[in-house]
Length: 85
Image 1: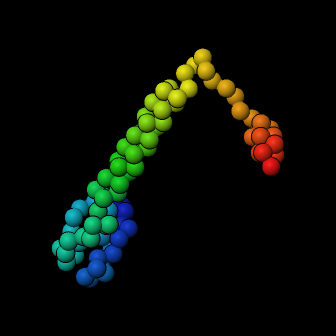
Image 2 (image 1 turned 90 degrees about the vertical axis):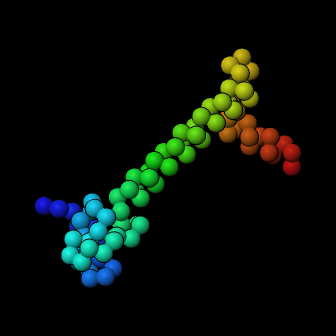
């Protein structure tokens, strides 16, 4: 049994998920109907997530070395905010 998610823009045929053309009229699939588009989108999002994670990890190591870490609680933030007003 095949997965038929998209409809052909020309003939309305239910197209298979894989393949670049309609099985009935052989018209080309649109870009958003191709599996490769979704694979590339997932890979780009994963690469962006890894990039952000690496950048934030390197910023944390530069900004706050292990011997200079300080814990800030919600109480400290509220206390400082009220003290300024």
